Amino acid sequence: MIDPLIIKKQIKELGADLCGFAPIERFNEAPIGFNPLDIYKECKTVIVFAKKVPHSPLLAMNYVPYSHFNSIIINEVDALTLKIMKVFEEIDIGCVPIPSDDPYEHWESERAYGRAILSLRHAGYFAGLGILGKNTLLMNEKYGNMIQLGAVLLNIELKGDELANYEGCIPDCQICLDSCPQGALNGITVDQKACRQQSIYQTEKGYTLKRCNLCRKLCPNALGIE
Ligand code: SF4
Ligand code: SF4
Image 1 (cartoon, rainbow, N blue to C red):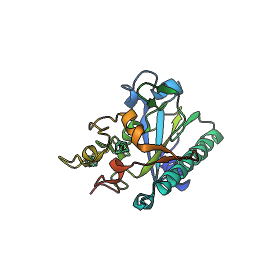
Image 2 (cartoon, rainbow, N blue to C red):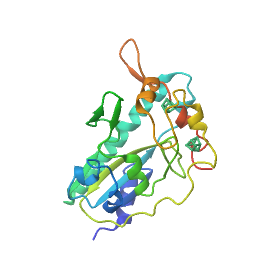
Image 3 (cartoon, rainbow, N blue to C red):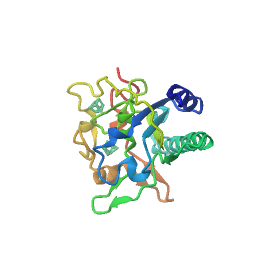
Image 4 (tube, rainbow, N blue to C red):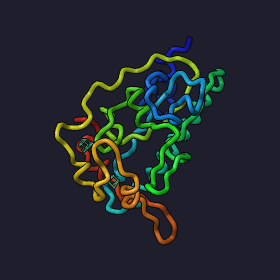
C-alpha cells in the first residue's frame, strides 16, 4: 500500500507548490467525453498539482513579459508532470500525464470554443486545491489565482483530499466582470470568442502575445485569499 503522504512529499520535492488527490468518483458529473475515464479507463485517482506563477510580470505595461514567462511556467509544469509520471512508471503504477495547457482536440470554430481533454480547474477543485472564482479561475487560499495546474491520472486508489472549505470570491465583488473590456464573464463561464478577440494578439512578426489579463490581475484575491 502506497502512503499518500510520501507521494505528496515526493511531488513537492520535485517542484510542486501544491498537490492534492481527487478520487475518480468526484468526476461523475463531468461532461461526456471529458471524464478522466474517457482518457484512461483504469483511472482511480487524479493527482493534481500546481506551481506558483510569479506575479511580477503583471506589473509590466507591455504584453511581452507576461506572455513569455507565462508560457515558461506552463512548460515547467509539463516538465514536472513528466517527472511525476516517471516516478510512477518506475514502480509499475499505471499513469497518464495531462498537458497543463495546449494541446486539445475539441474546437468549435464558430464560437471559437475550445475544451481541454480534462478541465484542470475542476480537477484542482476536486483535489482540494482551491475554489473557482467568478473570473472562472481556480483560487487557492495561499497563492490566489497565480497558479499553473498539472495532473496525472493513476490506476491506484488514494484517499481524496478534503475540498477547500474557504470562501473564494469576496461577497458582492464583481470587479472581474466589470473590468472585462469584452463583457466576456457572467460569473460562471467565459465567452471564449469574446475573450480571445481581446486577449490573443499576433504581432506583425508572428509572435502570439496575451494582451489581457485583467480578470486575473485585478482580482483582490489574485495573490492569495485575504
Ligand atoms: S482575459 Fe480579458 S478579455 Fe478575457 S475574460 Fe479576462 S478580462 Fe475579459
Ligand atoms: S474579482 Fe472579485 S468576483 Fe472576480 S474572482 Fe476576484 S473576488 Fe471573485
